[in-house]
Image (tube, rainbow, N blue to C red):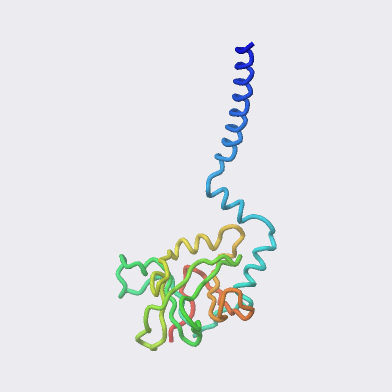
Length: 184
C-alpha cells in the first residue's frame, strides 16, 4: 500500500510539474519586445487623444520660424555626442524653455533637444540632443521610428505650452531627416 500511495503522489506531483512547466514555456516564448508591443496595442483611438494631449495645434513651417536640421554643422566633430542628433536654432519662434520635446504622430515622445548656447549670427538659442541635460539621440533612429506602426513619418516639435498636457500646445511638423526653416 505504501508504494502504491507513493506512486500515486509521485504521479500527481509530476502532473502539477508538467502543467506548470508547460505554462511557463508558453509565457517564456514571449520576448520582452513582444510584451512591450502587446502593451502598446489596445484601443486604436488612444493614440489620437495622446497626440492631442501633446499637440493641440499643429502648424507647418513656412520659412523663418526656426531651423531644424538633421546634418550637424562642420564645427562639431563627428565623435561629439551631439553629432548624431538633430539641431534646432530659434528664429521667429522659440520654445519658452528648454529642453524642447518632440513627438511622433501618435503622441509618443521621440526625443528632446537641450539648450547649448546662442547662434553666433543671430544671438538666438540653439539646441541639440546630448546638450543641456538631454540624452543623446540619433536622427536616423528617430526617422525609422517615425514611420513605424502607422505613424506618419514626421516629428512634431512642441514650441509652446507650459507642460505636455497643456491645452494650448503648439507643435510644428517637420521631417526628421531634413533641413526645415531658416535660422535667420
